[in-house]
Image (cartoon, rainbow, N blue to C red; front, side, top):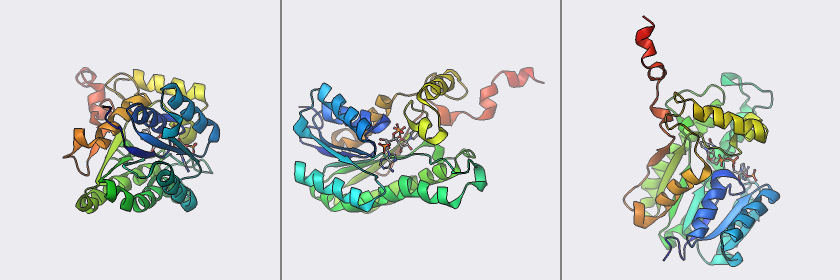
Length: 280
Ligand code: NDP
């Protein structure tokens, strides 16, 4: 039997990137999935990928909308229950670095950018968790949050509110995990490093071609990614699936798994390696 047979999962931000790959992986392994995002064309693309992977159409529920809107959150919960009868897994994946309207970085970024960034990357996760909680308690379910190595400890001057939002999310994961473990709900998170997705198009304003080139360049710089390449969404989806699978990760509570090809283990001094000695 496939590992997610009879499981029902809501995967936010599944119209693209990591969420899309997660929906395809979960559903290919038996899950019934609610997929969601604002962009109806890209959501349709996810649905096509699911059907191509031989997922029955009856195992797919589609909700178009902005996850920061309470009505959309409610629709996600209600239509999942109406369509599939229960909720076993919530993957809080929707997220982005919101570009500053005036193009500012560092401490000069506007407070409006701060609010929008927190609304999406933190508040919507809190709200979805609250709304899913009673249903996950019934099924003894799982929550997987998608954070980022941007959360720290390295400073992130280019996009500070995104990184502090993800740091807040990490603490929320730990807190919610201990609160909800009493109800037999497990909460964990994944912190990816660079993953080749639409993320750079949104947060850096790059078109698809430039975004692809940027990921290729980044992946070729060993002092940025020791593994030697940027992850693809499927690499992260596999880690999410591990944390969403109670048989595989039952005793892991409130943890963050870093999947970054070694990026967060490199300090500037390490990057220069032997050259440091040659320099003196
Ligand atoms: P993508 O931009 O490819 O996908 C982001 C997804 O989130 C899309 O489906 C998008 O859907 C959805 N989304 C964004 N804003 C909203 C919103 N307001 N309402 C509903 N859905 C929304 O990026 P990734 O797949 O890379 O991002 C997934 C997660 O991974 C995010 O939480 C991100 O912070 C995290 N991450 C990504 C890294 C990377 O290098 N790619 C690194 C570390 C963490 P739509 O546009 O249709 O609304």
